[in-house]
Image (cartoon, rainbow, N blue to C red; front, side, top):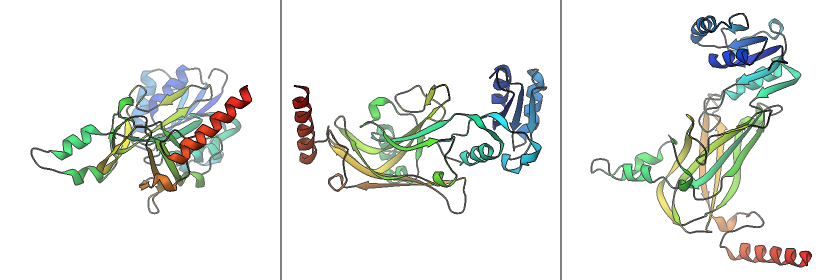
Length: 294
């Protein structure tokens, strides 16, 4: 950041200190809550108060004419399942009003994934709560929990790919919504859908919150099925998963999961599932490839 004159920082005061330590000459730290006063004290404690200007309001309330265009926007806006609490709206507003045309966003790309999974701890707990069956409780809301790679039944499906440099407010009103087919990589119990995200930065580095990576405070989000379903290796699981902004509260998303009939959904080509049409298609593609290589 030594080559950049200005940085807007949106939310969480410690990032403004990191930016100052990285060499930024001027940082605007935007904080709407009463933490703004505490942040000012922390800035003095770390001797960066001359570099960081705390703006105590929502970024949407800043008059564009009062703040010059900046080189970089840094924000830790991600919530559970990426868009929980709808903080991305504020970052896009800051981008459209305060970022220079050739400016950078940290992070710059976000991806949302989902996979069928096993949730043994959820089922074991609610099946026997001190001798009482409470299975209905586990399906009422998404659960925030840590899973591991062994809990996944299939490779993650990409639900949304957001280029934060150009994505619009309208485009984040509805994420997902397509029909997805996941092919189980092992026998197991299909007990829910695991959701996670990754974000990428301009230098190509990546932060992943997936169950195959180091745990983060975001953990993973699981939609728990009311009853588990026995599945076999190579069995296809079809579903539709949507994240839609609430009509009355733009900071909230409504999550909707629909399980579909895998026989009625178009599969990837080639597909590794055990359905006859996919086996025939895959065999044909492989035979054509072998002929071309001869």
